[in-house]
Length: 330
Image (cartoon, rainbow, N blue to C red; front, side, top):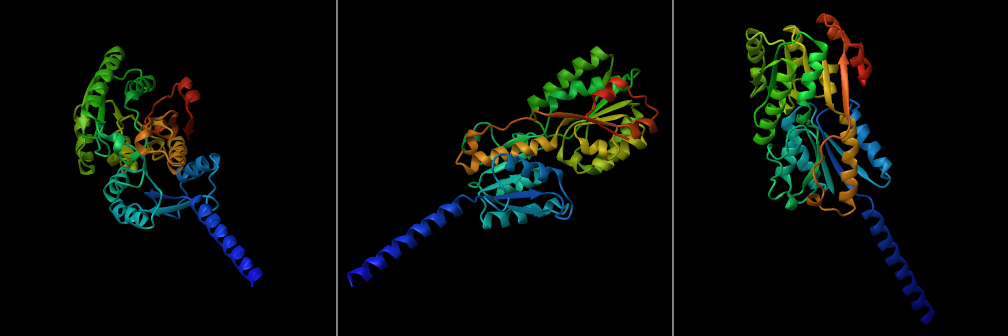
């Protein structure tokens, strides 16, 4: 009887140990939610970069980390519904790249850490408050590089040595007032040094684009710098088509614009941004507080030139610029 009791107690102890081990193993498989603007059937280089970043840190999809993707299918209005699905699962971290996804995530949870890869100023966009950021649940990276605006003016001047009148197109509210003022000052200083007359143009909604391009045509603008905004990001081909139809050489912030037919882009390498986002996820699932991880700016830049568009506009690209490009689209 004593031997039977001893055996029973041993079995119960083993079961308890096994249950504890299983629980610990389960805890080692965090769940990460990822809000994507596209569709599941369209391969995304950003998702690939993100997963590569996780893999480099030892996180293998479906082995020691669960990745829950939710796709908006090109409809930003779906993000609130999708993020609520992730919150209900629940997930341990949410990666929210596009501005509508980040805003939806902020509204849906104040406890689940959110990693942004935002194409706008998170403070100006209302995602974070500079005075309370240390207590919030949002961190990550921005894709914006407003400090490169003077360099973009210089690149346009390289392509068009006779350029005299250039405009900067922006959407109000995407940058803090002090940041935008600094851009204007530095761009103005550079414009003067290059012998350029600078004009500031605003677009508040996508419906304003046709009118503002017509206005620039009347003002005889010869070159254009497009600043970053979520609205512009959603209108890549339309912006490129408008600039090309007006034969207006334009420089954008991101590769997607050049790929859509825009003349040239110079700004953040999105793949690198999403690879770095994996580093934030790694730290958060290891117990870091979002408030202890500062929002970072891009560290890797890329220059992309569309030679086909340049030829259509009758522009001769300097060989030094072609050689400096990360990609030349033929």
